[in-house]
Image 1 (cartoon, rainbow, N blue to C red):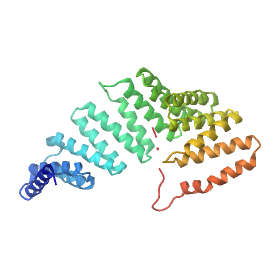
Image 2: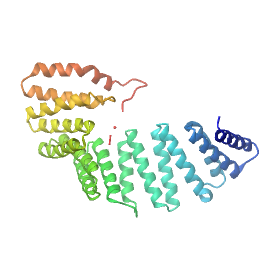
Image 3: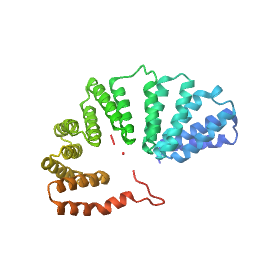
Image 4: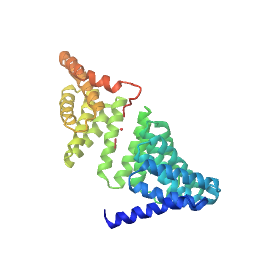
Length: 320
């Protein structure tokens, strides 16, 4: 064991020894120091327990009226622990409480950061409306450090939440706004992420020309970037756009290649693979090749049933 590790272990033991002789604010401070050690060890469960105990002491001693800075620090640590533990619903609640503390402290930058973080955490647990509300709330706060890129991120996140709520026309407005901000920021990657989401939204709205326009931009970028993962989704979007435009030969070409690329990925996105197969089956039916369509649907039937399975301890789970 290195001398540095020995020093850290000695420091930790000294802090635990102090626990038996301290109370009040000093005890809360010791707990905070111990939580830092636990966090650095990736022991997030222990860190949470220490932080929660410290928070309880500060609230007994006067709460945010007296110990506002300390509570902000502790709730920030709590939020990150929940994120590491993938307890995103708890993280969202902690970030929202943290945003309220930042508001009291008149720290507008911190309030915006925590509000956005809460929105992202709500998205993780599929609380689309709560995520949307938080993202919109963040845009209404005065941000002196706002940039075209940060404003673009707000809009694309709003669009994603709206799309999950099946509010596609509103999502298109948000995505177009985001795209304009990212162009101003001279960020071609995120301009093309907007094209990806716009292609999806227009597909869902049945607008073939607009779906093709944005899918083609996304596809062009994927080829220039030589990104096969991105190309897979770009081909999928183009295939869908040609499908709703009733250009079935082109749709078949792009969907077939998209499926080849999607199934090459180590971490396969089965939901999109199944959806692309269903779109391809529609194309095959339209081309009069019903037997091929039936066979393709049969091949993905078990995967679809597995994804749809609602067991007592099972759940299914999103991407930019």
